[in-house]
Every structure is written in C-alpha cells, then in structure tokens.
Image 1: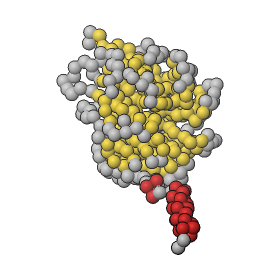
Image 2: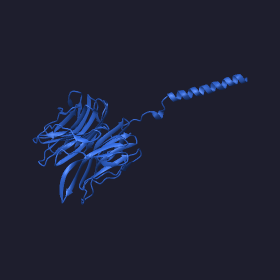
Image 3: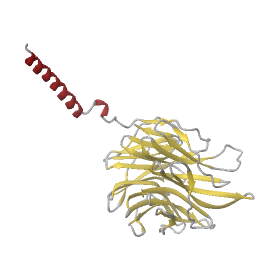
Image 4: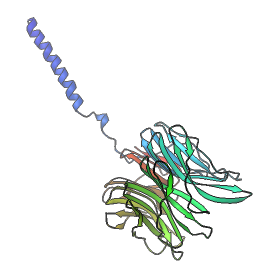
Length: 383
C-alpha cells in the first residue's frame, strides 16, 4: 500500500469514527430514559414530637423543597404549646431551618409555596396567652428571602380568631392565602388575603352557610381563574362542600355536590386547565361513623363527584391533590391511620401500593411526573 492509499485509508477510519461519535450523540442514551414511577418511599426527616405534623410541602427544584407544620412538646405542657416547623430539602436530606415563633402559646404553619430559592412563603396562625387566658388568634405569614425566615405583617378580619390554611402563587407580586375568621359567638366566615408585592390585604369572599364557613385549600390557574375549597353549614345538619372561584374581579360561590345528608368536606384543590380541576376531601356515611374518600372534578361548567377507592377496614379520607396532566393526578390522605395514596389515570382512580407506614399524608407537591413529594406524619417521595 503506497503512502497515498495509506493516507486515504487512515482518513476513512477517522471519518468513520467522527460520524459514529456524532451519530451516537443523536441517539438517546439508555440512562436518559425516564424511570418508571409509582414506587413511593419514606424519606428520613428530622424527628418530630409524638403529636407533631407536617401540613404543607412545596418543591421549587430537584434540590430545593420545603415542608412546614406544627410540633408540640411532650406532656406536661409548657409554653409555648405549639412551635412552627420548617424543614428544607437540599437534594440529599431534609434538615430543620430556624423560623420565627412570634407567640408564647401557639405557632402553627399550615401551607407553604416556593417561587424560587430565595422567595418562599408560609402561612398559618399564632396565639398568645396572658395570665392563663388565651388571647385572640391571629394570622401568621412568614417569608424566606434566601437567608432567613421572617414574619410579614398580615391583616386580621376578626377580633377573636383568624387562621390561614391554604396558599398559592402566580408570581412574586400575586400570591393568595385562604382560611377562616370568626367571632366569640362561635360562627366562622371565609377569609381570603392577597399579596401584591408590597402588602397583604383582605379580599372580600362569600359564605355558603349562616353558621360555619371555612376555606382549606386554594390553587391558581391564572390571574382570573383561582379556586378555593372548604366546607360550610347553616348549623342544621352536616357540613356541605364549599367551592369558590376568583374571576379576576371578585370571589363567587360555584355550586358543588355533597353526598348524603351527613357532613362533607373538601381539603385541597389542583388543576391543569380551566376545564380540568380536581378537589378532594371526605364525607360521613353516618354521623360519627365511617368516613369515605371524596373526589370531585370540574369540567368547565359543572362540578361532579367521581368515584374513588375506599379500602376496607376503617375511615378513609383525602387531604391533598396534585394535578400534573389530565391523565396524571395524585391524591393522598389516610385509611385507618395508614398513609393512603391514589392515582387518576384519565379513566379511574386506583389505589397505589405504598410502604404502609403509619400516618396521614395531608399535603402533596409535584415538580414533575418523576419528582413528587407528600408530607404528613412522615415525608414520602415518588421517584
């Protein structure tokens, strides 16, 4: 072989290697294929007191998540009665983060939302005690700026009690919180507050009953399409489901079904489109008897009950929902004291096997279909 043919042979080999290398870059690697989900596992978190609970979870990135809740000291009780819990996920582990405790009696955090690593909000309530007497309960709103948590001033609609239990955000200057407020007489009314980037203010909201009205959860699809859910009663018979919608101008009650004549309640709400919104909760078959799961769907014109599983052997209820797509919705709660997880595949709700750990799962958040977190008595992760 002369030097010219040898050069051509070597060039051919180099060209082939070049093409193979570039073609291989165009072919998805096996390791890049998304893993199959549905394998829920308990993730270790800092231990809570026996009567501590995590009520809210938010995920901003794979290595940036938050949970909030309430931790009470073991008996005999000493002040403060409750402490707010804040924990952070750094991609490897959960660890406790110091947060303000403005009251000497109760400090409760019920919901959290994360817009970015340096813009996280949490809401709840706090209450002082003086000379052995409980003082008025007030709204509690805290903000994480990337360095520390601090209390942000928030209004109170009533002189007796005020509490915020639901939270959602569209932008740093467009955040909504919902809950309830009431007078000494014992009745309660809905409470809605909005952050405009400068201050929190109360936004008028309707009440479905003359006696008790509570908003538990809220979700925002757009600036003029926000949903809040809870329950209301006239003081006669059981609670009825309560659903309200913000249309950009005002909050309005939207009719929603209740099952039977005994109490019904809705805990959380989540949606993927104006005609695809889910809410979950529970209802009593008989007074003080057995609880069943309750799931309802908004199709753009009406709310309707959708059948959901109820494992045998005890009470079943759903406390949280996360809608990722029309055929990918997760709901969590408990069944006879054991964590309950259900999935909507576009056709039906089905039970999802889990580790069987004890405890309610009262909140759920999804970064995407392959990174989902639930929290309550413990923290669980899917994929």
